Amino acid sequence: MEILRDLALHPEGSTTVEVASRIEADYRTVWSHVKLLKARGLVTAETAPTTRHVGPLYKLDREALKEHFTVALGYTLGE
Image (cartoon, rainbow, N blue to C red; front, side):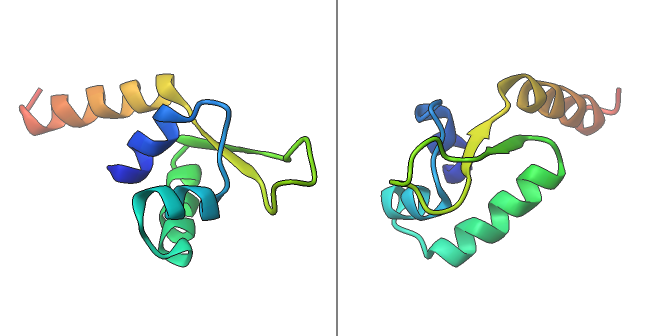
């Protein structure tokens, strides 16, 4: 949840190293979680527009996240 929240607070996009630094986690752990979030369509990856960033910029897909939680809530409630 911390990764999702951090990406939500930084809609311009962030590298996994930036996210890891802000949430005080190991960047490899963040990378692993972001990889799974991307595979599920909750996060997108874009090439960084400048050389300041190493690796892609990850962005939260807010609509996909809303849909995911709507489905999960329905499942949890037995709907």
